[in-house]
Length: 137
Image 1 (spheres, one colour):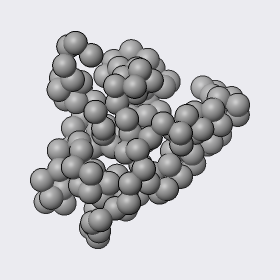
Image 2 (cartoon, rainbow, N blue to C red):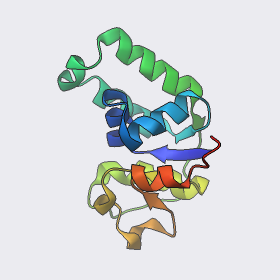
Image 3 (cartoon, one colour):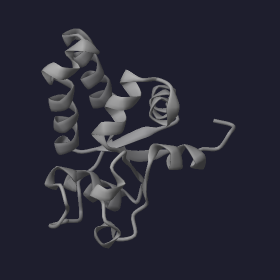
């Protein structure tokens, strides 16, 4: 199963393994989920993980290991759509990739992805997404 995962859910799931974001990280580690990325998304993941604020959770070696894991275990794609208007321009790569690959976008900031900009793409909270995962997984 492939998804686009907003940075806030990725980081949240790694910091706090309980709850829906943590479950998403577990599914990713177990190979059930594969993240859809492009260079813009991977760059954002790396930039956020390297922020001083997160040094209390991840040392430099952990950060580089996480980035390496994401680099090697994600599905790379190239956006075939262009979105011009979003409340936060940093969110554009995420919605573009979800639309391009016809996969859900999982985010903790649903309001950042107005329905009028989604082009029919499913945008789900972590809790909403986890409800879609079969119990047998």
